[in-house]
Image (cartoon, rainbow, N blue to C red; front, side, top):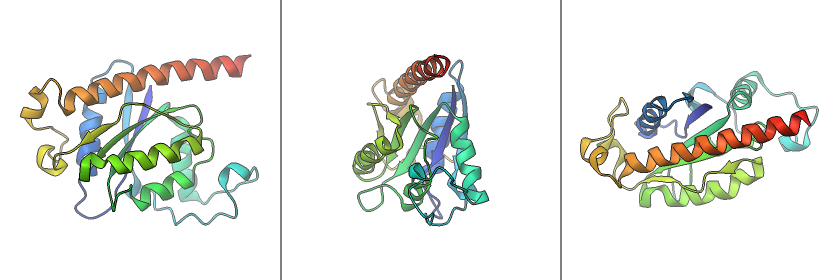
Length: 198
């Protein structure tokens, strides 16, 4: 499973990168998983300005910086969205990136990992409403960090030991969520292949 982990914030002083590195470290421990970070700072896409919705534009010709992002989305088997909560939703930069997608995530699973007020619950809720529009499948279990993420995860993505030791804490929740993500990814990849071959 090739899984992209999107850092859903580009602001100065963000902590979403710490959370993404934590996810990366856990995914690297899984057999058959190839995780990597997708930092939206590396994809300087303008606010969505195409003539029509990407899904209804068969002759679409995207700008190079947009195509670079779409090519990465096409190449993954699954996605983890690490999102902060801004003003009771997810970030504008993440929404803009998602708006450029047409069918790159079709029938692929997405894991939501959130942090912020109430664990980013409202960001998760809004993403659950948006992702079906991209034909993506959202993992039923979300990982929501209710503590201050910047205080319990260091810059290298190491979670504080007290949370690692908690059998019902963030580490266990993420481990189970990633196991589910791989299950969905393997099942959906097999189904896509079967559909393509038939």
